[in-house]
Image 1: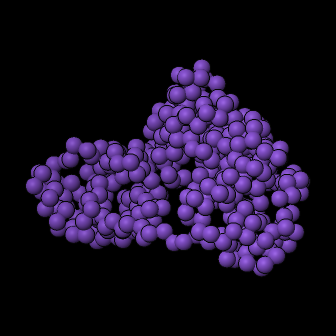
Image 2 (image 1 turned 30 degrees about the vertical axis):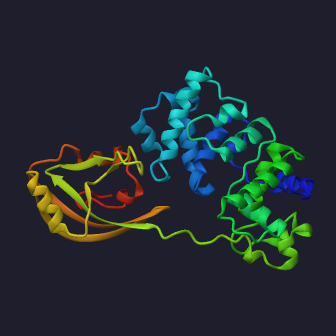
Image 3 (image 1 turned 90 degrees about the vertical axis):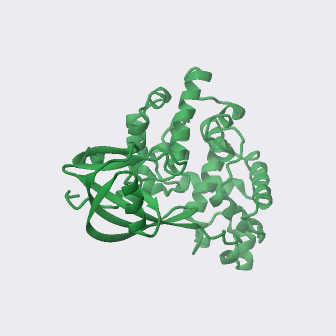
Length: 339
């Protein structure tokens, strides 16, 4: 690979992004966590708001968990931010509040995998550790003309080994960002801009005109589909929410919902618990797709007649905006509030 051309291209064409303005390892860590499974344009306003609210590791370690969730509401994949909070606490406890500068120590932080550790070490500390994500794999597979299935771990590992070999010959902080930027702007999944690529001269896919065939990624197994009865339960000027304890969306709030396709079944189950509801609005169907599952929600608006569940939290309708909710439920509008 012509590393010099790649790095020169990046220095000339890179996007001006706030987390590239310094080598602050904390800022780079926050940005890399936010960018997991999330587009740059989506991340930018969140990043600025996050750094303003939590400017140091200490501020993040001392963060209120619900306020933290509210700060990142809408980004999805909320487990990464719970792990980030735990990692900040670990840094305060084990590293005297200083973000570690050794790979093994960075890798030991909760929620920090090989990719994130490699990105931090190379970008913040200019150390030759590979950071190989889906974008990088696409660039390398096309460059090498590798038509093996990149969903398989053994093939991802081969790309990571090649990436490590390249970064050891490069300027790490430039190379890591350059190959990421190339994947984002030029070597895109569809309609790559090969005429603008600094690597086209030796790119095997370009030379053979097979860019659209590489990388080969077989389809994943079908996501599991869950059917829910979701209840927006009003009680005069109050509304009921439930705080999730399940791993998916843990710590976020939701309307009470039950895995069922039958409203009558759910209402009968609640009545057996002494809870009586009056359904006053016909159902509205909502669908939300996560990475590994899909929620099909039949949403009913109801009034509480009597009883309550111990997991339900009664709040003012107008306070609902102060509670962190996943998009899956935030998209459900309260009919009695102008949103």
